[in-house]
Length: 170
Image (tube, rainbow, N blue to C red):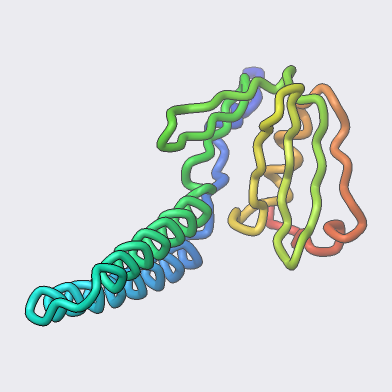
């Protein structure tokens, strides 16, 4: 009989839920598009009948605030799609480049819940660790189990999060 090789974490099916990201991305796009239309109409009116320059700067400042909030929301929504797991660690892609945290570098692992969101926090000796939103993954319990096998520290599950993680199908 041929020995079976262990399944690598890269080969496992830990896909994020797409519906939530699609709905929130659509919502952000519609709200931002409506603001952009309103902004363009007011700029057009301002060019036809100029008032004070404070009105113009107020609209530009408001546009920058709304743009930054939309980008922040899109950054949070796309987080599960930017995290990838490997046998040697976890990679997080962002606009500032890729960040890699090796499993042996993890100094603490906690599963916590805050306002209905369950997150798996991997802390390193550095200021920043990795925050994995478990509610965004279809097989969250299997994901935690596979990551916990590779960590040098035990996973601390806070009581508020213990009942919120749904059992998944293995």
